Image (tube, helix red, strand yellow):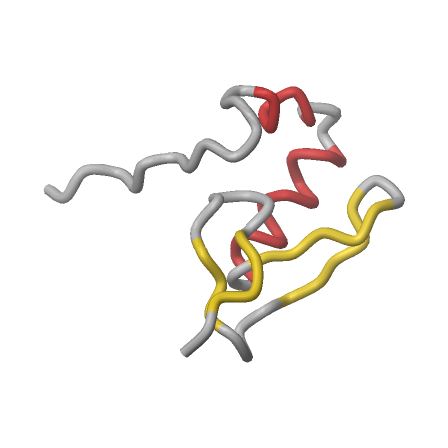
Length: 67
């Protein structure tokens, strides 16, 4: 399995064959799943795109802690 890209929303690596593209704010973005793509659309539709400026470029977000 080779990695092609990272998810625009969660930052996780996207395995080859799982890549989903969506046009977000007039730019083609890569996503790991339809859930991340949908959440991203909602964030932009709500005018909350500053959410994506919360971490420096290239820094991955940690997954939520296990319960």
